[in-house]
Image (cartoon, rainbow, N blue to C red; front, side, top):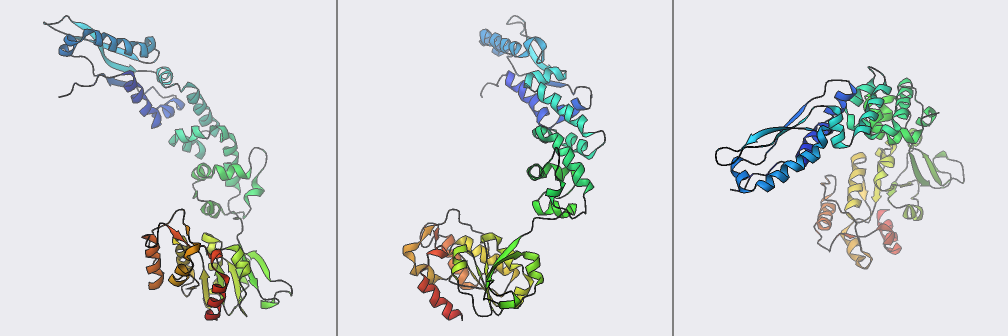
Length: 385
C-alpha cells in the first residue's frame, strides 16, 4: 500500500479557489456578509511516519508555515503527534481561512474583489443587472471594463422594446453598436431575452439587419424596367413581388451564378453556400420547378438537403457520380467533411454522399463546381431543358 500523500500549500489554495470559482466568496464580499470560513483538515505525518523521517516532517511543517505568511494567508492549527516510542511533536493538523483579507491574499485577487464590489454597486440596488452580477460573479468580472457601457446599453434597449428601430439608432455617448453585439450574451441575459443574433432582436422588437437575394433575369422579364438583368433585393421585398418564373436555378458559387445562362421565363439565384435559405425561403419558388447546383462534396449535399427543406421539389444539377468521375483530374481535398444524416437526398445522391463520407474515392474528395468543364455544363443544361 502506498504512503498517504501529505497536504501541501497548494491544497489550501485549491480549497479557497473552489469558493472563488463558484462565486461564493465574491457574492458574500459584495453583500458585506460574514466570511464563509474555510476549514481544511491536513494530511501529514503520523506517529509511525514521524519516527521514520523526522527531518522530512519538519520541512513539511515549515513549508506550510511559510505559505501561511504569519497568518496573512491562512491560519495553522497544530496538534500533538507522537507517543511512547517517539517524542511528542506539535505539527499542523488544520488550515483555516477566516477572513476575506486572507482569502484574497492567498489567491492574489484583492483588486478583482474590489472591482466586483464596485460593479455590483454601480448596477443599482435591486436592478436586473445587479441580480445578474450576483448570480454570475465571474462572468460579471470578465466584462468589468465594459460594465458602465453595458448598463447604458441595457437601459436604452429596455426603453426601445417594440420600437422596430435598428441597433445603430440606439447608439450614443457611452455605447455603440459594436459594444452591444460583442456583449450581446451578457446584455441579453440581463434583459431576459434570447442571446442569439436574430432572437435577441426579435425578442426586443427591434429591426434585424436586412438580408438580400441576388438574382438574374432576362431583360424586361417580370415587369422589371428594361436593362435590369442582375438584381439584389431585400429578401422580404422580393418575396412580396410574388413572381411566377417558369424555372429557377439556384447556384452556389458567385462566378458560376454569373456565367449561367438564364432559362427563358426563368431566374437564376445566387445560393451563397449555407446562406441558401435566403433564396430558398421565397414563397413563390414553391410553385416553380427548381434545380440546385453546388459543389460535389459533403457540404454541397448538405446545402442541397437544406434547400429541399424549403423546396422539396428541388432536383440537383451536376451533382451526380458521372460528373464526379469524369473530372477526376480536377478533384481537390475537402477541408472539413461532414457525416450528418441528410434525409432529403434521393437514393442516387445518398449513395454518392455515402461514398464521399467513407472516402471510397480517396481522402475527403471534392469537386468544386467552378472546376467542371463548361462543355459538360452546356450538355447537362440541354438535357435539363
